[in-house]
Length: 278
Image (cartoon, rainbow, N blue to C red):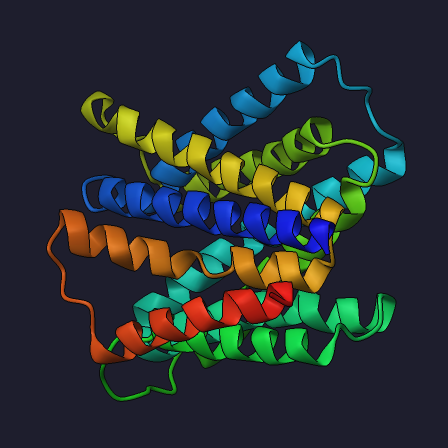
């Protein structure tokens, strides 16, 4: 039970870090190219991971672990452009929640096969958290059909990233994280060049670099959560990051929290103690 509590705590810390990173990256993307922001954010995250690996003298893991990490970076790098494209060509009210829920659902299914089902009360909590995630990610409005395929692809990609990182970090943390971020950075540079995008201007760099550091922090906390508990618990709790993005947008930008989002946040508060079995 103690490991479940620590896994849940790290999972929520991951969600907070991911959510704040998305808010920072979103602010920067309003004034600069999305892929330029992504490239610099990945570069700053990679620098942090490499620095931590050197400072802690972490042993370089096996080639198999690094391959898992590269696969994670590849999946994440493909998923993000698919999500952006889905948001552009379809309705955000469908693309965002489909992606978020699938991102959590893929690790849940993998954990059910590889680790068996959790306790019934935890199953209820996981299901309630997925419902909460749908409501939190879905703005008010009619559901659209365009972009659904891209949203499904993005959700599976992000979920695959989490599963691959679980396999990559069995014996190390920082080197696999660096390998994943390095792979993602290379792909981001290729996409940026293909799109003809430019890097953010100097005055926007602090926010962009902060987004990259926070995104790396989110990955780090997810790794700790998955090492100390079940993959499904770590994945679902870390996937609640939209709640933190919505809350920051409300507090800083004064954006209105919709009724559905408020219901989702309340459901998430109920889901957390159920997941931990408290």
